Amino acid sequence: MVQSDKLILVGQVAGGFGVRGEVRVTAYTADPMSLLAYGPLLRADGSVGLTLTSARPEKSAVVGRAREITTKEQADALRGLKLHVPRDLLPEPEEDEFYLTDLVGLQARDPDEVVLGTVKSVQNFGADDMLEIAPAEGGQTWYLPFTRDCVPDLYIADGWLRVVRPVEIGEREPD
Image (tube, rainbow, N blue to C red; front, side, top):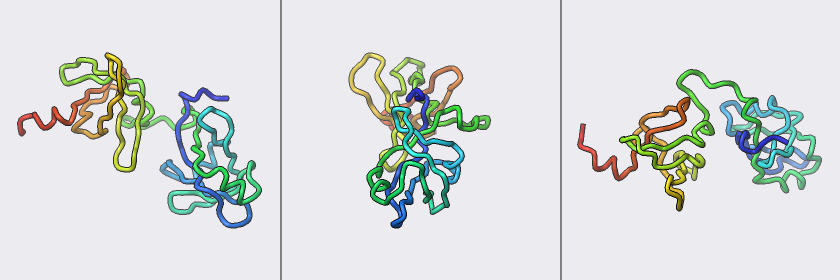
């Protein structure tokens, strides 16, 4: 098994396709067909979830056969299963690019470089990406939109990012 903190979410089982045991997998990758190249797609705990043996593209998904599925009912039973790959299987990002998972664990500092907390996760509830921040002083996490206004500076190699809460944005003087 692979450590779950080193796994990257790349897709989700959407259910069965047709009556011959094919499965539809929604891809979260730039090229949906890359799901085939990663080998076994893993569950969040690092165990094997699905091994695609063949696939064809369909919009932002792939439809194909998997070693673990022989019937439509088996495919439907896996609906909602999130599929991951180890981080080291992904290509290194280009200069000035990064994976959202690279933000997890970074310190969140305000404009005066006071540590407000640590990025606990990156979530997307249907609109834009949101950073979940665990406060430095403890307590309930809070969310910050991952926009240039709210996160103007990234220092990934140094382990931190600058954050400006939306209230602070409204208080700034116009440029």
